[in-house]
Amino acid sequence: GRPEKMYIDFTGGTKAMSIAVALAGSIINVQMVYVGSNDYLKDLRKPRPGSEELHLIANPLEVFGDLEIEKAYKLYREHNYAGAAEILKELKRKIPDPTIRTRVENAYLLACAYEKWDALDFQPAYEYMKELTDNLSRDSHSIHHMSEADVQKLRRQEEMLRKLTGIRQYIMGKQNEMILDTVDLIHPLMATMLQNARVREKQEKYDMATLLYYRLLEMMGQRRLYGYGLYASRMDYGKLRANPDRTPNMATDSGEVNQKELGKSLEMIRSEIFKKKGMNFLPDPASLLDIFLLLGALKDDLFQNRENGNTVRQIKRIRNMVYLRNNSIFAHGLGPVGAAEYEEFSKFVESMFRDFCRIEKLDYTELEQNIEHVLPPKNQGR
Image (cartoon, rainbow, N blue to C red; front, side, top):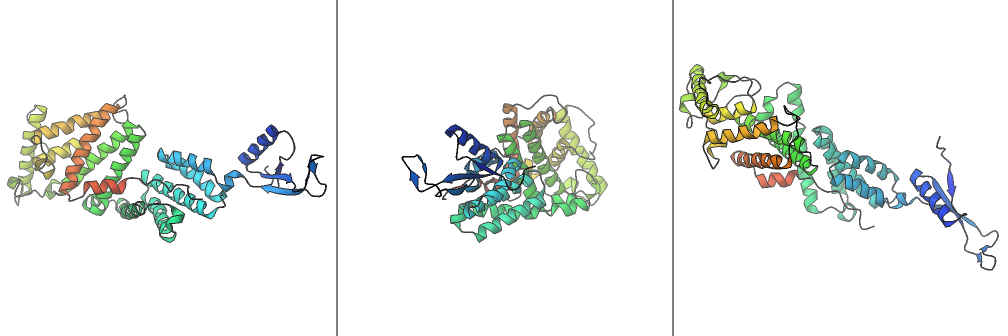
């Protein structure tokens, strides 16, 4: 029943017995005691009677907690944020040293924030991150032991998470298309997909990483397509807004004419890709490949600005990459994605994303740096 008043005395016995009982006491966190004296009678090899004192020995874990802290940090470095947070939560309650406890508390908040962010649970992720940055603003560098560059990065991540919390209102209001139309939402969401994919890659979970890269590729297409008034999940071609400079034949005042011309352009591209005629239908809803076929027909910047080939060749490349995802066991296939196949797919999607960022006036390098996870403060300088 684990009574509140329980002690282990390791004064007597052999050294091996004392070590064993002390280890047991530290593991189950029971108060350890030792009977000592400063007045020792060497001839009799025992303390002078009446000089004995009772010493309460602190659990080493409560003083430093080095082993448990390192165990938590190891899980953190493996991106097992939930496991790290579980250990750190217990440690921050036990460790009496206020400086070490502060660092453990900050590491706990950081692990919780990343665990929730990784699970796309943006509201609690933001709350944990905000509490962490507030702590860092309050405490001196000698206490939190984090570089100024990391502190600034965490503040940028806090702002990114704050924006991402706005997604919920559109989902609850069944206005998902508004997420695509809001750069403060869709850009951080796409960055989240990229970072999550890289985390899965480090864990060698290539199938999951492939799905996340696939979703990033799809988001790029959805975002670009929405710029023409088309929402991939619910296509209303009457709202088509074509670029009059690129496709003047689809920028007339007649919605019927615009749709007909779009169908013709789609048929031309499809006939070259699939080697079939009569494929001028307009998809509803639009799959990932449909989205890029439509963007090709609309002569979107995502194709016009890409090097090495024409639109048809680029869409064929996308189709080949999509087959990789479709053959994954998490999609329609029965086998896992190999490291070599994954590397080819991830490099292709990241290349597309760089072009997307350039078109949308995003700094890709800065975005990469901002989403990279920060390591927790080291337990140093005691």
